[in-house]
Amino acid sequence: MTATDQSPPQVAEHQSPDPPCDHESYQLTEIAIPIIGMHVLALLAFIPDFITWTNVSLLAITLLIFSNGITLGYHRLLTHRSLRVPKWVEYFYVGLALCCLQESPAKWVSTHRRHHNHSDEPDDPHSPTASFLWSHVGWLLWKRKGQHEFRTDNRYCADIVSDPFYALMEKYPDLPAGIYLIHAFAFWLAATAIFWIDISFGAAAWQGLGVMLWCVVLRTVMVWHFSWSVNSLTHCFGYQNYQTSDHSRNNWLVALLSNGEGWHNNHHHDPASASVQHKWWEFDPTYLQIRILKRLGLATHVIAPRQVRHHAGEQRKPACQDGVVR
Ligand SMILES: [Zn+2]
Ligand SMILES: [Zn+2]
Image 1 (cartoon, protein in one colour):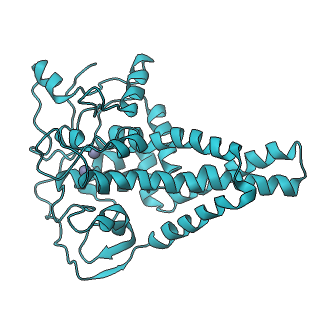
Image 2: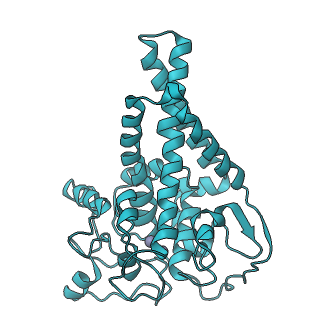
Image 3: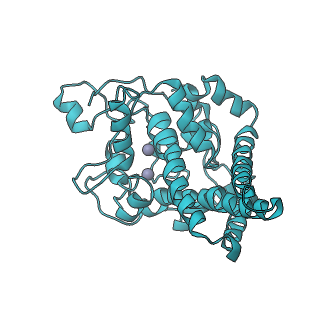
């Protein structure tokens, strides 16, 4: 593993501080209705016609593939810059993330870097110190006056919006949803075409709808809850390897559901590291994938755990001390 120094994004000193939160004023966000609507749609997957071993198997496979867009793509690659990959590999993972409908790269990165900079403080976008439900999904459903929505904040994502593709998504905010809808339609189209070989078009289109509901809608909702659990469960339940300045915990259940992201206390202790596995049993499938990418020559500058970096005598400032927003 190669430990390297990085040029982390900075929070400009001269810019105004975060606005104060007003916890008394609530109104629905623009994404509240779509989030609720997706949960209702996901229930349609359980129409008896659609409950098949094929759909269950396809759900498992698509969960394994697309969830990497969030854990490896948005989180370790874009937010923390824990590794470097060729641009086409980065776009591949970002493409997977866009198919998980978790907003644009700049919005996601802004929100997560803010979380690291203000973990479990009033300016944390989703701390359970407000309430467990707030940290899980409430922050996506309700606006609090002066509160930090799921939005792009240039103080946290200047490096992201300097990429023309990611900047395009900020210029046209409906583009991420458009990409998501196209991929949902592609799932329906491909499944319908395959079913059509053996059955009538009407029956094939109906079964294709079942595949789309399982592999796109239900999968999306499941990845949402797995990601949200990192914000909620791992800041409430589990054990700590380190005394961090927040309430982060290591939670095996969340780790299992989120490709290793549940070892969250390890992550808050050392946000830059590409690996969150600090004990032998804290298996980190995302890091395993990073190692495979490195072996294939597709990942370089993979950031080693802090103790390894220090062992190597590298001069690296602790996260956040210098405005690092990891
Ligand atoms: Zn956290
Ligand atoms: Zn993080």
